[in-house]
Image 1: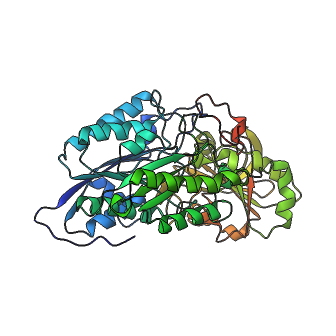
Image 2: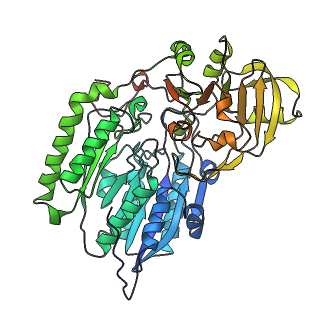
Image 3: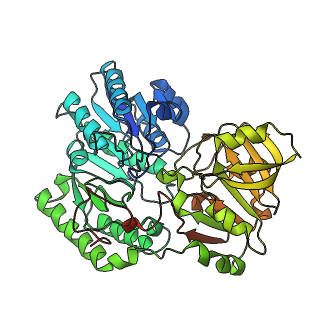
Length: 497
């Protein structure tokens, strides 16, 4: 990305920063409420800068890019985010939207705006939630105020999102470790647009396919080759951006599926719409003949142990059906129960169960007692090892770009077979190795580390886990999307048709 020129002006351009960020799994019965957002990230004004300045999030990249320009002023307005989960309640979304618009009113007028949606948000009554709030924002700002922003590549992108903005750029890695750079790029396009040096146009290319969540690891084929090809096309055609939207299959909405977003500057091309249409056809011609490669293997629990025996330890075992980052509750014990019955294995697993934390916290370290935990109410004898506050930090770029983690009151117990279970009060995705090391647990002491995710935990655990096994466990994020009942998706779509 070119460095924005420092051009001091008499009056600095005022750039608003705001966002509503949620990845919504519509197949989960428990809704996401206003309280879930308030227990997540609820940041207004300078609190946004305090949380993200110097971190690895896309907002961090935006802050750094705008602060480097003497002719620009960043005005953080409003940003909320909740852990992925079920459908957002109507009251929660409408309250959040009203509060965001009120906060924006207090800083208007502005010269430009940077937005931070996830792209897969769904609220009751608002199936295209991100398209809705971006449209509301556009109506408030008017047609002449440029708006750029970032997207998670798991976004299900709608025409409304694209129509309401000048440029939306998705992270290009999964696990997401380039969020900072993506934020900088979105800011750079806005800055150059405000300076009159750029006039971006964008086009959404929705594909008749949905890439399996299992195959969305961008450092391995088929995604590795796909992203390399798209990067080549971007450079060859002199595009400002070319994003791959992997899509989020656990949302029954019309936009569900994979896509591309292409962004160009008309001054570099002739008849921009025709040009972008030609580029889109090139990308479609690449991916559609290869669609079978993006459908995944789907290894079941019964097939796992032979792979574990043969693999170098510790093995990272990805519990795909209970993917917290995809909205799952994080309380499945299917893999633990299976591994406890095997001839050998020393396992670490983190399970969300507030009630079990309360019971275990009444004991003293070293006490042995019977404990029931998890969705299947697994009952076993355990020994209490630690009672913790569950707070830790991550200072390197990992999936999600988070620095501060809070699992709530937490306990660590060992089962009679010697396996280690961390029980938490808050659902916490396994995006940081410090979830273990901050509390005295050394990953190399285990044969198997179970992480409730699909690809995201790899960024954290790959440095210490020579082998990675994705397991198609049962649950609300199971890998085979064809087992879910959709009413609203577009047709035809591979792998359904």
